[in-house]
View (cartoon, rainbow, N blue to C red):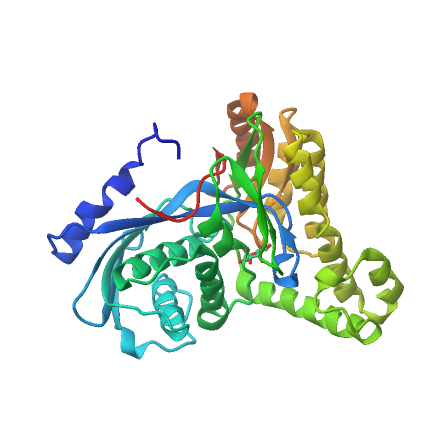
Length: 392
Ligand code: GLA
């Protein structure tokens, strides 16, 4: 957010709501963490590969204050629910309800040796839930920042991102990569982030003023996202196990190039081969798109997005009728450079790279055409890159 812009109303309302819900008159502090879109590099993070996400101006906000005892109490404005737990009774595995993202973070902090104190947390936000924009990483990182503050624990964005990944894996049960939490803490205004998920080295990539990213929410829920996601991750591990027999240096699909994959292809069953092929080819695209964005070459950037979508649709098989339709309609508009699903897939959101001056026209026309064919609560909005987790 630029300094001239005002925080949205729901952020302004966090402190008064906190006081009303918890009956406390001491003014709370507020932490904010953003959702994200991934520009390219999909299903590469848990293969030690590269990704190119950007944080967006949709956030989760937490109004918080310390408690004297060892109780963690939270209220979700979105669900209108309150829950509490003793910090001494936290043990994984948990579930995947909203409070799990709170309790899971407290557990992961404590079990990683961080101090965690009792706290009251009031949570609200405007990241659409369960639609592939990483509302879960945004909750985790906003809660982590709040708990660091009340507990006197120093905030380290990269360590906290890794901690959030642990929450997903050990508390929630999704074998996810580190991309979502990393961009939620390390996002930078006006920039995407090129991240090497093996070394965690990252570099900022300026996002051209001439373009915007349009989010196209299909309105279709991400059915079976958790089990299908873990199934894809298992296929990648299976491919690595087989390829490693011929090439012991292979630790992840990141270590495999197309030549190696093709030479060993007949050792893999067809599904495993196609999934590995997606990852190996997709892994080349983040650097290529970063180069294109840096030079303002939007045609090339958009072409890479289209290729990525086709690979996710045909090889990795994580697209859906609605995601294919929305991206096809987007591509048919003259202001669109390219379009693809973003995040895990299986429903949720797609993104389009669009000429900034025609963004409104693009959104209206494309959404109208989608609505003519799909009767779901869909939406579109334009976004630009924003900063990562911070105190308000
Ligand atoms: C989800 C996961 C990420 C990443 C994407 C797919 O968003 O949380 O770690 O694997 O799917 O690229």
